[in-house]
Structure formats: C-alpha cells, structure tokens
Image 1: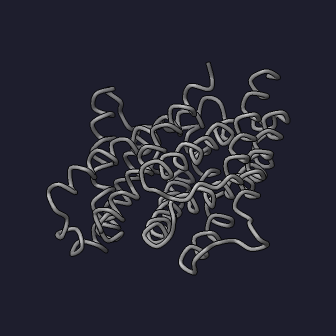
Image 2: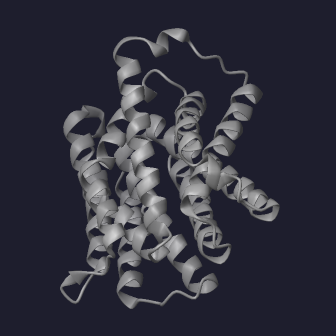
Length: 282
C-alpha cells in the first residue's frame, strides 16, 4: 500500500494546479497578489494540522547544520514559487506541468547518488523512463515551445529544484512533515507578504475564498507528498508523482479548452505502464 501516499498527493496537487490556472487566467489575478495571499493561507492550514495532531516542535531543530539546511530550503522554495507563478500567468498550464517533470531527471540522479536508501534500481529505471517520456512529449518539431519567461523557470527546474528534494530528505530525518511545512511556509509567507502586500489588497472576496480552497488542497497534497518522501523515498514518490501532469493535462483539456496533443497522451500512457511495472516487480 506504499503507493497510496504519492498517489493521493498527485490527485490533490493536480486539482490544485488546475484551480491555479483558473484563478490566474479566468479571474485575471496578478501572480504577485496570488503568491502574496497563498502562503499565509497555507501556513494557517499547516498550523491547524499541527494543533489537531498535538505535535510539538523541538527547539533543537533550529540549531546547527539543520538550521542552515532549513534556511536554504526556504530560499529555494521562494525562488521556485516566484518563477513558477510568474511563468504560469503567461504560458499554458500543460507546458509548465511538463517542465516540472523535467526536474525528475536531475532529482533522481542527485538523490540516488547522495542517499544509499534511494538506490532501488527497478524504481530508478521506471522513474527515469517516465521522466524521459514526458520530456519527449514536450519536444516537438525539434524545439521546445517555451516563452522567454518560462525559459527562466526551465533553467531553475534543472539546476535549482533538485536541491530542494535533497534538503527536504535531510530535514525529514529529524522533522515531521506538518511542522516542517508550517515553518517553511511561514517563512515564505513573510517574504512574499512583504514583497507583494499592495497587490494582495486588490483580491476580491470571491477570489479570496477560491484561494482558500485551492491552497487547502495544495497544503494537503504537499503533506502527503513529503510524508511519502519520509516513508517510501524520494525516487518512488517521483515515479508516482509523474501522474500529476496526466491529471492536470486532461483537466486542462476538458475544462480550460487547451489543445489535445496525442504525443503527450502517449507519454502519459508510458508513465502509467512504468508505475504498473514497478508494482509487479517490487
């Protein structure tokens, strides 16, 4: 039953990502207002989870090397979210979802190189096949269909995002997922709230409650995601999380009228086949 955690995370994050695009495109909300309002909401969701679970936070976790890793993790997440939502406002949701999958390759290589407990070669092979299939789906007519703003995000996904996975795995040896995410999102809420305070004031009441809904989904998705990191490993989670672009892709085609692409459909079938193969072989 190891697949339940990453599979649930993929479903929840897929729903959240689809609502992200609705808010930014249909509601015409500026990405700065969106980011500035989202992280305080996510912080409050995690604070509620921590209180309900009666979890305590050891002050010793804020000292020494763990503090350095925590601060580095927050910094990477700030850069990732700022670049992602900036790109999302100007590009197709399906394109960004596929770019996100590109990060699987460096994450798989880096994490399996650094951590011995991640070296299950059947899972690594299946995760690599899934990632390569999705990159192939994005590579059409000998070039990538990426706007200039999105190109910056692609570069960050390749060289910056993999270290977020490494830092998260290190932190999860000592932290529980909910308190860790509460602290990390609290840090991001302070930074984005300071930077985008003026834009947040323009959010309508109706859009605000939509933000509450989608950020609650996102918070729960990341909780399952990092719990999966902790319990079954990063590479295994990467494999199952490759389903997320599949869910978002069909959602965008059905509800946002984005163009159906057979190439992406074939790639997503390969992802599903890789997941089934791992379940049969391990």
